[in-house]
Image 1 (cartoon, rainbow over the protein chains, first blue to last red):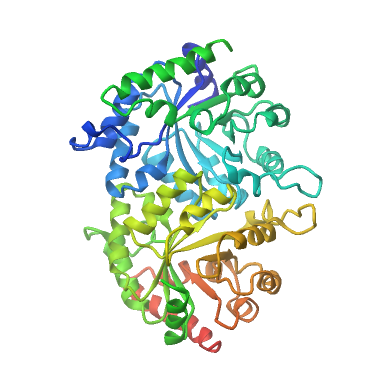
Image 2 (spheres, one colour):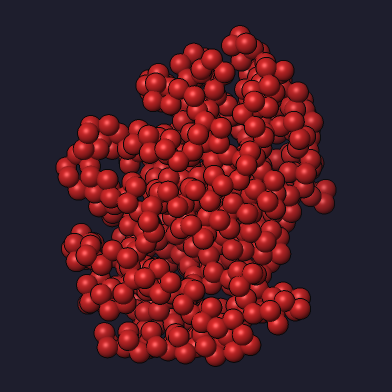
Length: 267
Length: 267
């Protein structure tokens, strides 16, 4: 999907919500377990309930991989089911030497037709560039993540006093334009947003960490957005596990609607 | 597998060779393609040909993932086929927030019974700790990798003048003992080995990058080993693609034997 098409979808829906499909066989409603493919059935109903309110879906690959071939099948079926109007993100945090990253790019961009994949920066340019070679596909590079461990290395001051994540962003901006490179910025670091927007004025930010992880949507929207929105805000558990009963899809829709309504003020 | 059992296997075989199963459907001999599962058939013959000469196998997960469910099946069959005497490494470079790393740990340690998984450090402690919770299982954390991109961030000097990879190693040694934590150190940085061994005297190093990537086995063996060997040296392409003809297994065995003979001098 192009940058323009993504922005158009946002305007159309007055939304920059990404729904995270962290679908866990141990957390989905019990009545689905008797079906042949409970994971896909859960995703299908979540997608039906939320597609008018969000512009992107982000399957968390670990949850599918933990189920072996069955999980992989459910992921493939989910990808076929997501409407073509929606931006799709493989949340995979991959990154390896060139010939190996090329294989991961093939897995997510060719076999499964994702629009974007999350990539870890530690291994540098040849771990990222194979993903950048595809037209209208995106790398979403980890910069400052939402978790506790983001303090261990990402925030380490470098020789010039700037933290590592700033160096990661500046270097990566030499590799990929705002048309194919986004950054992951956790909603749990609101005090950093303005500075990050100064460093990368045009790049989209994928912002996880509202809801279960405690980030504040209003702070994100105020300080991390730009004139073309410039943010995709993800919620996973807060939407898909809004209820564990038979009304899970209905409750997911209500949770997504609440977020979309907060987002609408930016348009 | 315990540290003691791994060391015993090394002594028994006078080898610290790990064979990388980077099995690429486009590079395996043509005559295998007519079989039902060419990837597994290739791995099976490589394992039969090399198992007396190596102490570990390291499937590169990207190569299986790029084939979707079929690749995942071939990987599961390969894991069942590798003898229990051999240390198995899922070369996956995973790492995510805690609840997600837990899912990856389940995928590789429970569903497929790998002994170890390679993990990227960028997301810090909660991305690593779920893998450390398993008894007799190992995290192999990226420290200094063998590729060109290792210069981008891993070697960045920190405030104290030390490169990032040194900080990664020092911090991670607070999380995991030499009984369950190894480090990836690329064979392409021989000038760094002595210093790295001083930083982590007892931890095993997994050393990729000899062969196709140009690293020198003798330098690795001289400067990176310790009194209990302390290194697993990986070769992938140099062994498994030693021939592209019907004699591929025979040639792989010869390539592995050549390496094992060089290794024998350390015992």
